[in-house]
Length: 163
Image (cartoon, rainbow, N blue to C red; front, side, top):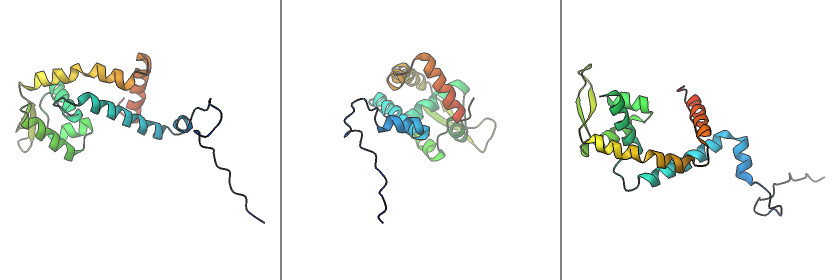
């Protein structure tokens, strides 16, 4: 007796039916984790392309935005709220400080800690970064309607437990 070999799927590129959606489309429907990872890679690539030639990284932009919105914060607060690893945050703040966009000062409520504070030079840098956001969102999420973008933001927020 011989054991029968399990049948293998035919490679979509070898199939005769030109109407085949392709393997990844099927996989993305079955595995939202895989689809999310690939979408994240696509969005990250778009962000990198948009930021090339600009003086801020995504993390630095987020730090400036948070400091502008809420005022001076410790590096730990920034790291926790923006969900940026502490080791990455140190380099991010160092780069912003070297660029003259932030400074570290004694924290007003905790003398053992330092607060990161915006300098006057941060305003124009943040305005420039914010000015590119609509174009970036259109490039990254252009396939979605405005309503679909809001739904996506709500669902991703739910996954991240921020709603």
